[in-house]
Length: 285
Image (cartoon, rainbow, N blue to C red; front, side, top):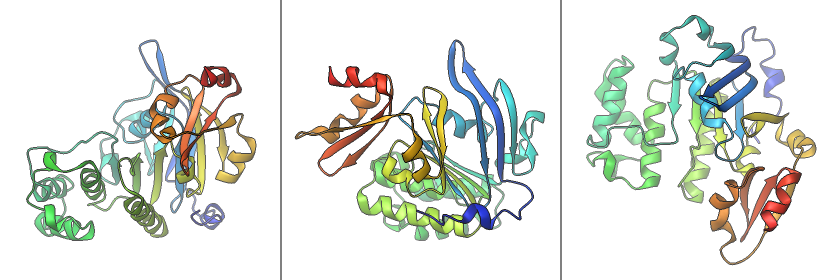
């Protein structure tokens, strides 16, 4: 885990990086996030944990000021977003779960364009530096749309951090990466936090959640528990199931689609499933 005492170390800072209270977002009749509250201090790594569709992505998008919530208070980097401001997007680095760059531009062109959008001096040099920092030199002149999933995620992360931002929002940043690349991403997240950036990461993987200083566990648009990873493990209103068998790990997407499943993560050749008590019968059948 990253720096358990980080929250106490930053206690002297008067203003949190993020403070949202009772935020709710609906799309028609569907509630995407309900009565969400969250506080992030500079230097913390905050995890949004849960299965797909639980509200994690909507939360990150609200913090990036993409959709406006229907109710609640949002303060991000001293900006009160309920009053409306576009300046918040400059010090924020947002990496979406979906590929959000220009597929018909090269790796270098995407990074140079992103540097220009953020008004960096010497956008060409900034793009070259990012290419070297993320080991993208071999693919610098390849079209972004031709990259494999892992390299595309690496490019997205490079683009999100090119400014560099004070608040970093990462939606499933290790999706599609191998074990070594996943470790590299988390090492980078640790360095960003140590440099006083605030980082919020969404993940369905409880093993990755243990790397965070603080986390909230989502289920069906609501936070069911929060605290340090150890506190969540002790207090979560959920049951853990172990699914074994030859292809157990490949069943994660199907298991996450079951109502009541909060998260899944691999455990050796098996799949660990965390779900509310009512989901047990659905999982057995």
